[in-house]
Image 1 (cartoon, helix red, strand yellow):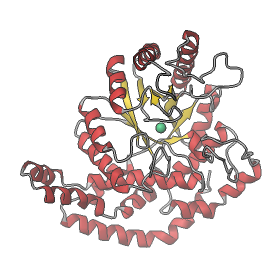
Image 2 (spheres, rainbow, N blue to C red; image 1 turned 45 degrees about the horizontal axis):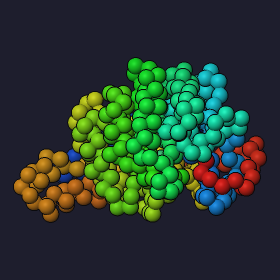
Image 3 (tube, rainbow, N blue to C red; image 1 turned 90 degrees about the vertical axis):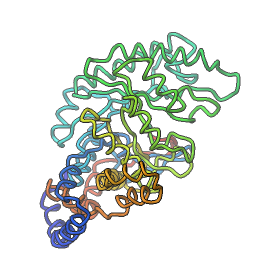
Image 4 (tube, rainbow, N blue to C red; image 1 turned 90 degrees about the horizontal axis):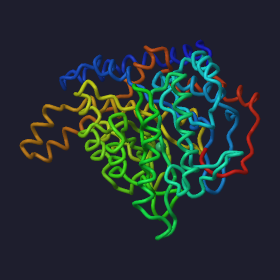
Length: 424
Ligand SMILES: [Mn+2]
């Protein structure tokens, strides 16, 4: 963790300017009939989970260029996630990936307590083979033609639930790479029947208060067809399995230019919006930093979420899911968590009564201007003040760089070979 004096010192040089900016923004919002304290209070309670796999350098199909001081195991990862939470106060939980993060439950709980974190959704892995695995997932997992392979994938998912239940998680996220690379390779219907049957067996093993999140993705690693390729298929799965099954929307898992915010509204309308994987993309599943390419799209997604918040039972799970190739992962995750929080704060500023009036009156111009007024407002002072008051850093990147944390862990953690490709 970072010494609190380091954070205090960095904050000391920035706090006067922050107070001036916050007061000026408060006056501006007041003229718009918005109470800045209310927005700050709501923003301060917002948290997004960090993916354990995000704190290591990712990679592409071509190469992986390791960074300095990469985490060696889940305990190093939790240290890094603890720093992200310490500085941003926006990432109170971590999403584990099994078997990459497999460890005794008592050790996981002890480490999480030490660094001030809790555990979010568990993620299973049936898209790659592990050493000594009996049946290969080369031709699929939950939808494999071979019953023994499907049984092995089911068993793994149930093991993820069992570990998760011990460490306080309340959800399992399933993403499978199952699909086909050639027309005719697989029978679409029979393959999906096998998937539904296997996913149903995992569903039946869920504790009462758990949610099963299924994640759709258009393509990759299968390039001709993918079993859970779109939100329609995902909705069918959630409807087929039962009340505890909901859909997870990963922002990078759609065809280019698809209206993701409308998908969010549709899934929510029918009670099946379970959670998010936030990231950003330009061409495909790029896993770039959230808000780095299309901040307006992120805002439009949050506009739907704020709209949905009118229902007090609305509580989808929010996670980041990114791959960092050219930046320090801790820095990228801190910026991304802040970007998600920013989109939330901006969406809270939208005058929903005025917007509904313009919509009903078919005043397209004023409707879109009313919506965009939220996005156009610079809410940085709200985010920074929320962080400061919670004990975080006014400027997380500055404080992180001043702390020397990366150099310190680099001395303890050897550089990992860059030979293997693939996103980790
Ligand atoms: Mn994802």
